[in-house]
Image (cartoon, rainbow over all chains, first blue to last red; front, side, top):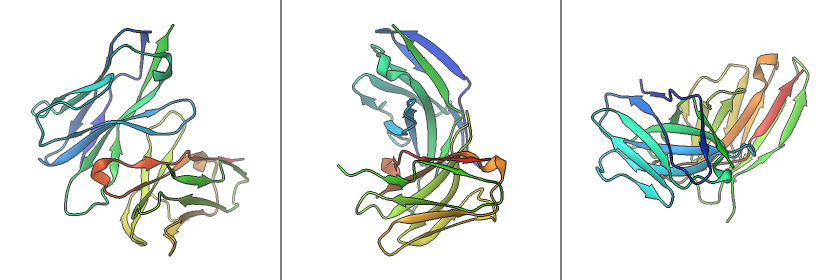
Length: 117
Length: 112
C-alpha cells in the first residue's frame, strides 16, 4: 500500500519570502503521479502542481515549484515570493498510474501554512 | 468554466437520521470521487464511479451508499447517522485522474 507523509503540521513565512513544504511517500511502484493541493479557509481544494514520476525535470507553475527526488521518495513544494493569499493548508497527494483512468488520490496529513504580513 | 457543484453546502442532521449529498461533475468528466475530511484531517477516499459504474471503494461504512446516475451526477446516501460522521464531504471529478481531480466546495455535515 502507498502512504504519504507530511512531517510539518504547521509552518509560517513572511510575505515575499520563500518557504519549502516537505512530503515523503512510500511505494514499491515505479509509475505514479504526485500532486500538491491547496485548501484555503474557503475549504475548496485547488490543484497547485503535478509531477509525473517518469520525468526527471521538476515541475514549475509560476511561483510554485517542486523538488522531486525519486530515489529518496521525496516531493517538496517551494513557494517563492509568498503572498498573503497563499495562506492555506497544503496537501501532498499520490496517484498510482495504471491502465485505469480512475485512480484514487492518497493524501498526506497536510501542512498549514501561514503567510505573515 | 463550469466547476464541480455540490449540494447542499451545509447540512445539519440528528443522530440516526438519513442524509443525501449531491454532486454534479464537470461536463464530459467520466469519473466521480467521494472523499470524507474530518476536522483537521486529510481527505479519506470513500468511493468512485467511472461511467456510472462503481470503480473503487475505500473506507466507506456499510451505512453509506452511493450511485452515479445517467446524467453523471452522483449521490452519497448516509443512513443511521452517527456523531462521528460529522465532516466535510468532497466530491471530485476527472476526465483522466493523472491530470488531477477538480474538487467541489464540499458539503459540511454536522450530526447533532
